Image (cartoon, rainbow, N blue to C red; front, side):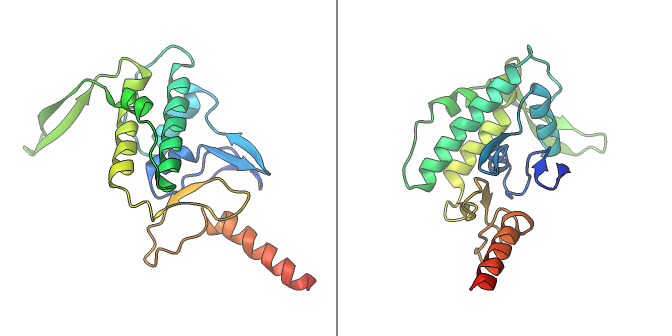
Length: 192
């Protein structure tokens, strides 16, 4: 994570062990105030590259990609929160992103190996973000929501997928919230 100071990150956290939860973490909290990492189309594109989404370099009218990404993120956030609470939300917005024309294409590499790849239309920002929407839908359907968690630190809003062997991960990151908790507990013991 690159920062301008010890407490002011300039890039979104990538620590959730799941790309969809990393997307939710592009809205974080700093000293109790919301910290929005997606403020422009370029911020969204940089995050997509940083997190390994191999999407074409399609251009849209200024602000369209940002608007679509924020819409997708907040729709998915609502669905994840409801699913985590044992309920279900309306998938209407997510389904709009999933309704992208696509087809399969058989591709032959120069070495002669065959690959099957999905070719999607990407004329709108919603269509462009369809792979991320598909990953979100897959998480909602197939994810183990006993392992989808929010950081236990009271000031943190970050999500993660607990892939630890013991499934006892409590913090978004030991370096961030785990350490803050340890320091607070140490201070509390010292005062007693």
